[in-house]
Image (cartoon, rainbow over all chains, first blue to last red; front, side, top):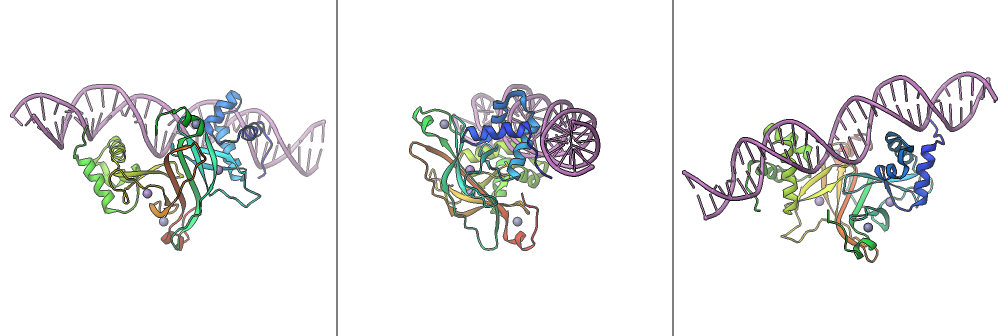
Length: 132
Length: 132
DNA sequence: TAATTATTGCGACTTAGTTGCATTTGTAAA
DNA sequence: TTTACAAATGCAACTAAGTCGCAATAATTA
Ligand SMILES: [Mn+2]
Ligand SMILES: [Mn+2]
Ligand SMILES: [Zn+2]
Ligand SMILES: [Zn+2]
């Protein structure tokens, strides 16, 4: 089952490449307008994620955000880093900071997910937004 | 606006005290049966959270889990720790490991949320569950 | 005991995400 | 090129988590 080069996939990938932030389904829907169907956006994001092209973060708003896999090469993934979600401008970005996970013996880790929410530099300056 | 000692609040608090894991709304609904209304469980959890009695984690399933604030005394909260969610038995627990968050200058942190999902000791032994 | 007001139950609603199915379209072989 | 096949799409219906308005109930306090 190989992937096909479709209009939707191309459009979504170029959104990711033009911005350096993470996108939720809803953000992409706003950007792409009527050109791509809701369900198609969901399915395309899922495929890009399954293919290791993007990684997925679930933020404290319970929403899935996807970001290009920057540090990953092939099957070697590095997603144990923090993410930041601005409560005012709503941007979600990958942070540099990595987290070294230590679990009790016997535990097996499959997935790591970490988000800090707060106010980004610009929004903190303007003292904006309501806290969560 | 002071809190009242209601049946729902008491029932929910005693669930928290009898188990050492975190609970989602749905887990509590299962445990409490018909005795407490859906909306009441949601509202009670929210109040306990607002009062600093429990803290809140959003796991990678997008669901809110609440756990007793064990390390917190009064207004001094310590929630910058990892959580673990078992993909097989679905238990969610607070881990010991704290995370020291370092944000770029100018950023203001409001909330921290981190979950590792995988298989807990018991479930890993039985090699159970489907990965996420 | 009575007044006040926090809390409840109920139902309607919102939003994120999924799924079945018929149709379209990319791809690669003929 | 055409053809054939499977991957991807659009649409509509659906699920699940969570919220909210409102009238009724019940904990607290005076
Ligand atoms: Mn990231
Ligand atoms: Mn915790
Ligand atoms: Zn911002
Ligand atoms: Zn388990």
